[in-house]
Length: 284
Image 1 (cartoon, rainbow, N blue to C red):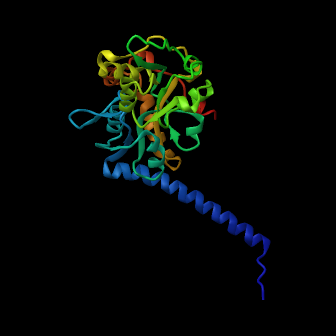
Image 2: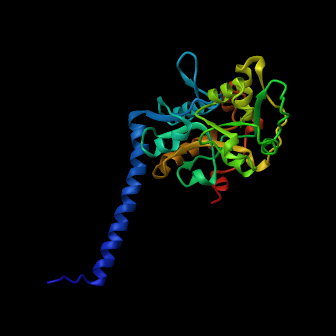
Image 3: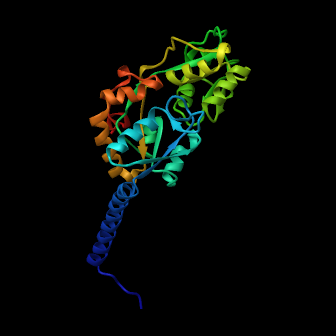
């Protein structure tokens, strides 16, 4: 004989189930923050991209984002920062899979990424530029210049926002060389496999210094002001409690003399500060 469950009972069961899920979510948030505090240790995912986060010659991990993490978590009483090297395109999947607790790689806040992670408010703003062969023989100064010459190849680091910008500008996929990191971008331009590489102004200037007399970062890159990048730390959506705790410390610290002294070795200064918020940049 079939059993009929009263409507009221079914509604109560559904409501209790929803409460259980919400409670479990709250516990997950609290547990991550509590775990970090209990162990006095936090794991950060980073990709080798100077000056944002990279492995130095002595094997240590440094850069604007890791150094900010160290200072901020120190203020929270956390002593150990454990870095986990990851290819750029695998940072968000790695975070969501639990390989590390946050992304500290200078990641730009974009509406698409906001669907997958939660960001702190940005700790810098930065425009892009091109790395080209010395003398800029193809006379490249914008995405439009590249789109207008089908023979030009552009090296882009996989998973970055520049891929979308290039396609929006009309650059064909056959003109785009996707590479795993900035070292590969430099090698592509030096070897002639690509006519240009695109990335943040600081990154391209750093690559130009490494590349010697064969390459240069162009001084004037004509780009949509909306493409200005706003970098932040990223967390799993269920770790909003941890994100909020970090954001609170960041708001107290960003713009201080200690902050500016911390990021100065990586080319950042007061001009890179911004009052934009993650909510605003996520379009919320």
